[in-house]
Length: 147
Ligand SMILES: [Zn+2]
Image (cartoon, rainbow, N blue to C red; front, side, top):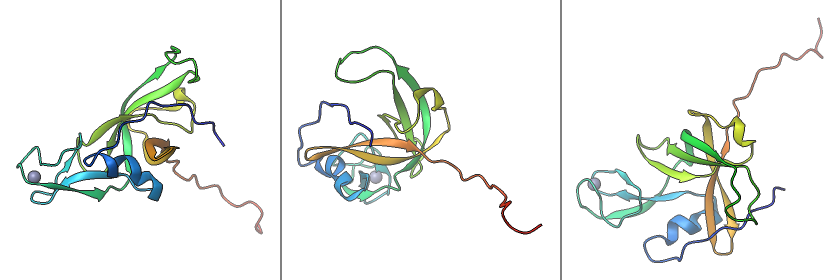
């Protein structure tokens, strides 16, 4: 199991609680407009497009790397470097992006357009969404059969 680096976790409030605690159920939840159905991030109680109220809904948790960088500077000595910082665009809506970390592979293997899916780092009550690579299965012919 990979060690989990320390993080500065957010203060939970009525608006952000489902986003930061949904990971307990393995679900990335984001506010969504009930009138025009747009996902709204940064989180908001009202729609940035039409002004109607939002509620939390579960996203697919699937996305792609929009852009990325590798941090090599030890800003926090407790956090091992290098590590990835990415902006991931969720598959649920064009332009639905947020800043996160791609983990589960060396930082140099992260690339633009890489398919990723959410997983969560538990920090007490808060579950921080990070992303791991989705490896496309490669077909390997079975050579053990008859020939
Ligand atoms: Zn709306």
